[in-house]
Length: 478
Image 1 (cartoon, helix red, strand yellow):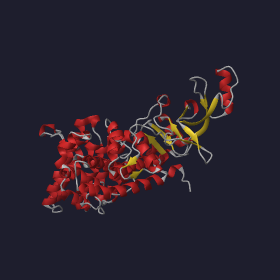
Image 2: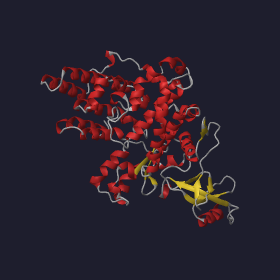
Image 3: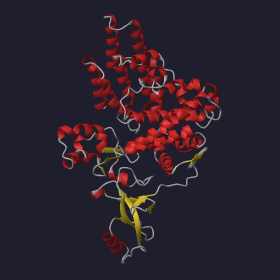
Image 4: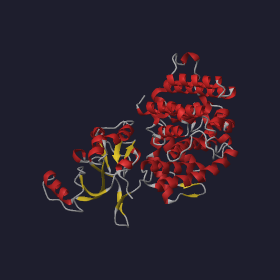
């Protein structure tokens, strides 16, 4: 049964395409000008003003291009996700390439532009068309196509790149796996970390050709990326879980026997595990760093366990990796030192409030001396993490976020977190603010904000004021 637009989560109604920087209404199937979104919600979907705030707060997080900027870009893939595909026509006269969706319009085009009658199959041909916008900004574009047995035109996946990896060592990719790999190499690779595009598009798949666990990790992330683009199509999510469940046992076997041959693949997998874990958390309700059902020691989430122990696991091959094809990914092994002079002279008001709270609870006997020290150390390390983020500025990326504070907190702290100790949860909530400027990454999105609400739901009322302050910072753009 179709739900009313007002009953849909903002991400379900309004999809953000990070490549073209547009918001697409998933019910109307076209992009919206940034200044027209509020009016669209009001006039088309009849959403009351009091109910439109979550939608407008959601879209305010993204940079949106003007229609003229969007329609003048050349799409890198066809079809573009979220947009419908129309059976249309393409003019064949010289370099004209006029596009429309009716014979009548094409005939009119030939009379006005080419000064004679045009004829089907000679002067124009069938083509699959899409458009981002409607009305005055309507502009069709097309891509390679073919007729299918089911009687409808569908876009053809582009194959044939010299860098395309079509086979595994022990067998061939199935057609559906080939499509996932193609999606990864035409779309997903651009969405991981800026400046590493060639590494993810070419180098990682080339390494994966000889290591099945890495290939399945690629396919899992590709499927999860599609699930983020098409949140109502559950088959992508199921596919992602399937490939990841195949990859993890293979990866554990590889980690148990690290060699010169597989060390690069292991490092690549550890990074894709972060992408997958964050992307999957959008659909789960866990505490990001810890999971009571985790197979890893100390209840650590798998991504965090292998990140924390990566240097140890790969230690014998560290020099080989740092001079190899994935040397870009070794940045986290050399976190810059921060001196006392670099720490802010005036601490954030929330840090001060947390320090005062820890001291107060300890003095009243509500907090043991040991737990007090563990929490103070975690808070101090979190302050360092925010300073590092400020120093990196716009260069701050997901690897920096996961290689900072989570790598430094003690196992005693993660134990408190697994037990859902209120102060450890509040610190985790503060950590989520580090991801605020990373929500343009599909695998991050607004998950950290949802994590704040999840944390709040697990706390008694007396702690809610601390989480509410963090939620306000997120939603108010502070």
